[in-house]
Structure formats: structure tokens, C-alpha cells
Length: 332
Image 1 (tube, rainbow, N blue to C red):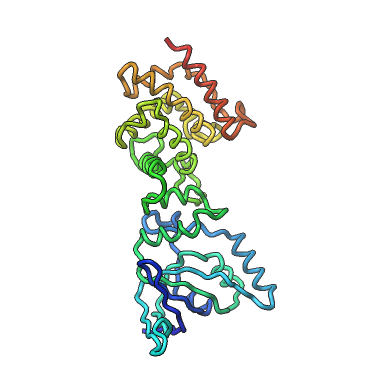
Image 2 (image 1 turned 180 degrees about the vertical axis):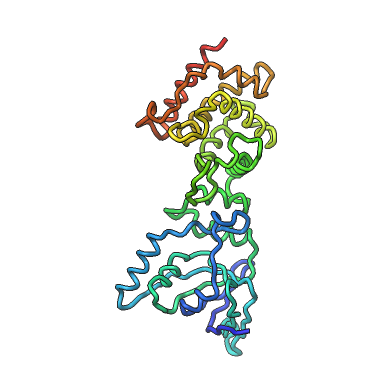
């Protein structure tokens, strides 16, 4: 097997060892690959690549006389590299990397590398390389690096929480519920929650970030029994609530031009959910038919985008929720 040999520094931090070295961008392009969350929901951790950002980096490289990339790329070796330490300094030595296609996964720095490829320039770049990290460790590393940066899609961050089991417990619970409702065949939100940063044509109406943000407020509301239910009970209650709404608004549910399953509508429906939930609790009936009776007065409510044009954000959701809540009061 052909190999690439580079001078490297071996470092240990916590329970992880990694290598720091310089490698030509062409060599790294030959052996590296990226797995994006939008392409592979089981193994992917990276966000979708931005063509504009790649073109911008390529332009910068092409127009620069002296190209400098002081920031390192972070990778994971799928195949074990061999480290041959120097006798006088065991932390330094030769790192022998298998020259094999798709054997090095890019964990951070895909845009820089793709920009170099687009520029057709071959320059040495700094790399920090881990060896044989498992999926959870790779996702944790990506989150550690990127979760506080601007421009990282919040839905992607929340979706990775589901792999790493990191984040606050209420966020994890909301993420798990959102992902379940998106995959469950009997869910009114089947294939309607956008889990990653990819843009697809189809049923997706609501981002996971919007779902989690609205649901978290209900999960921490100690004034309603919902917060004390277990995970499976909470899913059943939410399915009954939104199935009843879907049945009532069949011509508006998931349809373009209506806010019902958009961020504004979902946020408003979650704001009014505690009132409906309490009324069902008082009647000791949380089934879909019971919810149907409670929301019957909404049957003429218009969720069309033209009616709610210019209404947005938290204040807009509160306005829609107020109108829905006023209708509830008319029920006996």
C-alpha cells in the first residue's frame, strides 16, 4: 500500500491523543471525505457545504500572492496511521498515513479544503488528526468546536445532541420528541420536521430548532401536568393534540400559503396547548376525540399567510395564540 509520510507532533489531552502536522492540500484531498448530516442521518455530522463560501475562499487563494491558512483542519483517521517517534524526542517523529481513498474524515474545515480544491493550488496546510474516533466522539468534537459559532444551523446542533446525548436534559427531551414525531408513521408531523441544514423540496415545514424552542417552554411549565408525564405519555398527548388540529384543518395542514405548520403557527399552537391540555385533564380525557371537542370553535379560524402577513416572531405567535385562546373561552 502506498503511504504519505509527514513530520508530526504527538500530543495527549485528557483521554485522547492526536497528531499535529503539515500536509499538502492535494494529498489530503486524495484521501479525505466528508459525511454530511443531510446526506447520512446515521453517520453524518457535518453541515451542508456552502458554494458561496467555497467560491469566496477559492477567490481569496487565487488572488493572494502568499496564501496563509493559520487555522488547522481537524480530521479522523479511519485507518490507523503509524507513528515512528524520534529517539531523542518521543513526542515528535514520522507519521506514516495510508494513501487510501476516503480513509480520512474531515471533521472541521471542509470549506477551506474545498476552496483549495476549487482554486487548483497545492499548498501545505496544518492538520490536527485523531485516530479511529467513534461516531459519538466525532459528533462531540464537532459540537465543541462549532456550537457557539455564528452561521451553524441550530437544527443541526440539536440533531447532533441526539447522538452525543449532550445539552440540557429538557433540550434532549424536546429533540427526542421532535425526531420521533418526524419518523413515526402515525404522527401528524411525519417527514415534516427539518432535522438538518439541507434544503429539500417536500413535506418539511418546520425546523427542528423551532420545534425544540416552542416545546421546551411547555416542558418546563410546572403549572400543567404535561411536564410530569413520561416520554411516551408526552408523545401520545402531543400526537392527539396535533392530530385533532390536522383533522380540523385538513385543507390547511402542511399546505403552502398557510402558517399552520410553519414556525409562527406551531409556536402559537404550543402557546395555547396548556389551556387545551388542562381542559382535557379536568374532563379526564386526553384522547384525540376529547381534543376535537375542545378545539371545535377553531373550525373557522383562518391560518392563511395573507391574513397573518407582517406578523412574525414571538410577538406574532402570541397574537395568533391570543386569538385561538379567545375562541376557547366561548366553549361551554
